[in-house]
Amino acid sequence: LTWQEWAQAERAAIQSAGLWRRVRDFDGRGPVGTIDGRRVVSFASNDYLGLSHHPAVVAAARAAAESWGAGAGSARLIAGSRPIHSRLENELASWKGTERALLFPSGFAANLGVLSALGAPDVLVVSDELNHASIIDACRLSRARIVVFPHRDADAVENLLADHDGRAIVVTDSVFSMDGDIAPLDALTEACRRHRALLVIDEAHAVLGPEGDVAGIDSLRVGTLSKFLGAAGGFVAGPAPLIDLLTNRARPFIFTTAGSPADAAAAGAALRIVRSEEGTRLRARLRTLIDLLEPGHPSPIIPVVLGSEESALAAAATLFDRGFLVPAIRPPSVPPDTARLRITLSAAHTEEQVESLRRALAEVRGVRA
Ligand SMILES: Cc1ncc(COP(=O)(O)O)c(C=O)c1O
Image (tube, rainbow, N blue to C red; front, top):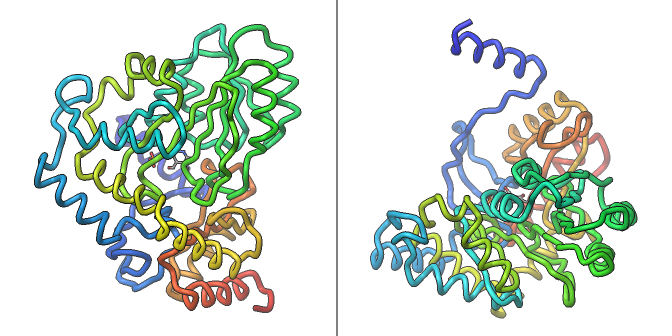
């Protein structure tokens, strides 16, 4: 077989399993836009506070591009660092209550950077079974002994740490990206305290918390500028010795071009809004919208698990016909037989939009609205 013939055969196999995906362009600003020629309300973005199109965020990006140009031109350690990068790192550290923060080109790269720099064959890494793909790949790059623990099972973590003699890392999403549920941070912190393990928390989706009190243990908080900070990029916040070491050892930081000045400026402007009264109002609004759809649910990620790939695709197609963009999430993004709709809410949605999605969902699920 030529490579092209091989790729066609692979494609046919993926298609016949109902798992083929393609890129679709969403032409819009905020939740309303056009995709495949149809006007829809998107419930598919992680822009949870609508900050990607906030006037102050857009203005900051524009001003930074005017000052420093569109691209940084080289890696941070060479000549790519601009004052806007260091300012943002200081602001991120202050927000997370840590000594330092370090920017990465994406949240994905931040996870790769942390575990590849801190892992070694004599290190144990314990990782929740539903952690994000970037953590799974980071584990592989770490060269450490990896043990995957059952979802949210802090007792299992305690036992694994108790059985290990030497350095250990516990890594977890704080809000799980496909289920929208929350890690048992207090219990994990306690286990790490007892066994002097490092707790790495990926807070990519933690727009409404949980905060997690990690005082007194070694911990790193991984975050992204790409979701509720409305820009693109990632970061790690933590104590100076660890962040300084990452600056020297994390290859996804060292061997890549610095993020664009516009992205850093946009994320900084968004962060200032997040920390202001306006941010408090936006989070309260998001909370209200979540409660309209799923009262009490802890995050803006609301899964509707349907099981088979076909049923998830059919439900997404029905919703699309009614003007809603809600993605069908299939393996390998989620475990087999748990294909689902993944609804994400934003403070930029209106009550009416959420209400009409709720009614359409009830029809799709065959229950009364
Ligand atoms: C939990 C989690 N961590 C990391 C990432 C990667 O972040 P980024 O999109 O900035 O690469 C994502 C999302 O894609 C995520 O859901």
